[in-house]
Length: 100
Length: 110
Image (tube, rainbow over the protein chains, first blue to last red):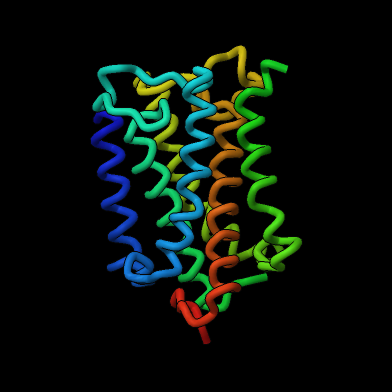
């Protein structure tokens, strides 16, 4: 599978985790989208650093082509899937009382 | 210094987020068990993805801009750290938002 396909799949799996598996329903919560609005500019900045300096180099035919601040658009999906799935588990374990 | 190129980005993420722990007292770092349970399974999957992507050459890393310490699957140390640091930063952000907007429930309230 290409990076594009995997990125779309990852977002779908993260959404399934949040909505149907652990049912934290973060996707419907203001707190998630406000957090994401804070995180996204930082993600774009770090992605820009890593890609514009060619620290990470992508193979052309594995990505769609469009870039945002020098990083392939797929990176946005990659980051969103990572953040949503971790936050979803964080809330899940908080509900179960696992903290220390 | 060039070898610290990737590491610089990680240090930036730590500085940009961990102050929330000190000044907003989000209390994320002391919930060690919850952090491990939340991050480990997801990091495991993303590291699998990373290993696959590296082996299929979806992406690669400039050896002159990383510390050249490699873990399993040919994945550089910086990538392993990325999958720990970025999730912690995201959790701190969510907890900081909660601290400032306590009426916005996130689903784990008693």
